Image (tube, rainbow, N blue to C red):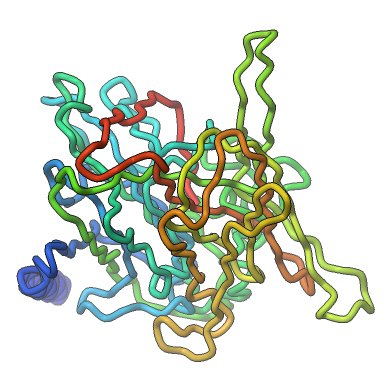
Amino acid sequence: MAYGSDCLLLYLSILLLLFTIQSSQAQLRSENGVKTDVFLSPVLVLEPGKVSNKFYYNIDFPRGHIALKSFNGEVIDEKGNPVPLHETYLHHWALLRYYQRKGIDIPKHHGDLGFLRSDQIIIKNSGVCDNGLSQYFGLGSETRRTATYVPDPYGIEVGNPADIPEGYEERWLLNVHAIDTRGAEDKLGCTECRCDLYNVTVDEYGRALPPNYTGGWHCCYDSTRCRVKEGFEGVKRSLFLRYTVKYVDWHASIVPVKIYILDVTDIWKKADESRGLKARHDCLVEYEVESCQVGMANDGCIHTKTLTVTFPTGGDVIYGVAHQHAGGIGSTLYGEGGRVICSSNPTYGTGDEPGNEAGHIVGMSTCYPSPGSVKIAAGETLTLMSNYSSAQRHTGVMGLFYLLISDSSAKPEAILHAPAEVSKIDYIIVS
């Protein structure tokens, strides 16, 4: 009877939470023409040390021909209370767009993005990675204090009926990777996915990990468990990602922007026209920062990783932001001649409350240049620098840089529509 009562209470709590969200959603629905919808992900069931890393298909999302203005999320409990990072670390969430063949019934969630590929078409962002990082939005621990808003008159165009192949419909997918660090023996080690703490020697597909791979997302996949202190007991609990979508109905006055994600680990191979070879971007997504030499002052312990790459197109920079993990001290994107396109620096928390958790990156600064003031030329050579403190070793760190680019020649009321880039791919790596 007790078990049944607990289930009933949880069910009633979730109903109350959904009602509260729907009520607030109605109040926020339209503000200066911008509509706001608030949704809950499917439930994340976690207990101390456990990892949840699932892909949720066909999530609740605004429909129709719209322009996205922002997307953000945070982890909450069944009562709607924000959950601090020192209890549940949000490694990342990522939002992906896809076309689903009509009439095909699929599960709402799955641990592997690669199933039923023949019935799904992933709609990638504009680049530049060839083997992943296809999301439209994606953040991690910094989610609560990082702006994602697309300024006027710009927007991310989605839902155009002219883009959707016959027999398909547009849907959205959400990947949420969360780690319950309550009672963890080494919280930083758990959040950096150090393989020894997870007692992992193979990846999620059963393939042996390289001997020199000591930590990263290959060791903290779904249902793995990080080591907790002996004797620690904690309750299993149900959590959600509460996500907020801001958007406007599409109209001719909106200037579309394209999404680009640069990765400092990109193994870039230049195009060779004489041999008919296109440029190739193999993005490794994560890397390791070794600790500096013993005796070196901490302020001199800085690890810098650099990528030099040719940008495939040109336009105005509308927005920029970096993504780094704990230990990150900032990232800068340079154009030719050393001019700064955007610098993005982390804010670290100083307390215990959600949004200000000590030791965690709780926000990243963003760039919003005045329209037309910062441009990237087609084929321009860019340099991305990602800096981390190397006062101690860090595993599974990232050095991504998100850009929104507008065609410099685009004018409201006179925009030629460019169809979305579609791609049937084997797998997707998200940050």
